[in-house]
Image (cartoon, rainbow, N blue to C red):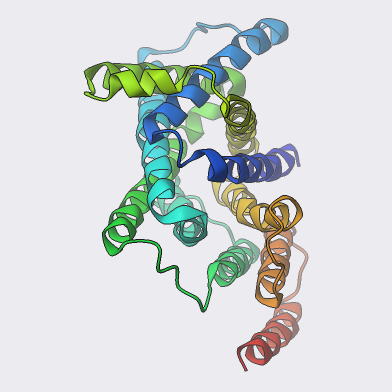
Length: 315
C-alpha cells in the first residue's frame, strides 16, 4: 500500500512542478533548470539524511555504487535535460502526448530487464490510463506557432528523455529492495549533479548557465518548481521500491491527470468534455490496476459505456 501512495504522490508533485515550469521554461536554459533543481535536492537531502540517521556511505559493493551512479547520470543529467529541452521547443500540450510513452517504456523495460508481469488487471488498467492520457492530450486544433523544425527536434528529444527515465529506474529496481531509498536518491542526484557541472564547465554557454542560478525576479517560481520536483523524485524512488515497477508507473502517469486539474484551477484553462472523460478513464484505470477483485464481466459493461460516450463526443 505504501508504494501505491508514494507513486501517486510522485505523479502529483511532478504535475505541480510542470505547471510552474510552464512559466519559467522559456526563461532559463534546460541545463540551468536541471542543475538548479539538482543543487536544491542536495540542499534538502543532506539535513533529511542527518535527521533520519541515514548513512551517507553505507556498506555497499562498488558495483552497487556504480550502477546507481550510472542511473543518476542517465536519468537526471541526460534525461531531465532532454525533457526540459523538448518542453521548451514544443510546449506542455505536445509534451503531454510524448509523456504517454512513459508507461509503455516502463512496462517494456521492466518486462525485458526484470521479467515482471502485471496480470490481466494491470494490463487493462494500464491500457485505460494510457488511453485516457492520450485522449486528453488530443486536440482538433493544431498549434501553428510551433515551427516544424522545433516540433521534429522536440519530439525526438522528448522520446529519448522518456526512454532514458524508464531505463534509469528499472536498472536499479533490484538494488532498491536492500537499500535506503533516501540514500539512493542522494547518490543518483549526486552523480547527476556532478556530471551536469562537468558538462557546464566544458560548455561554451557556461557563463549564461551559471548566471541563471543567480536569484532573479523568477527565482521564487523556479525554487518552488525545483522543490516540487525534489518531492516527486523522492516519492518516485520510494514508490518504485515498495510496488511493482509496472503498477508504480501506472500511478506515476496520473501526473498528466493532475496537470489537467491544476491547469483548470490555477491557469484557468477550460475543462472540456474530452479532458473530463480522459481524467475518468485514467483514474478508473489506476484503480483497476491496483485492485485484483474486478470481474471480466465488469470490463465488458465498462468498455461498452465508455465506447458509446466517446462516439457521442466525436459526433
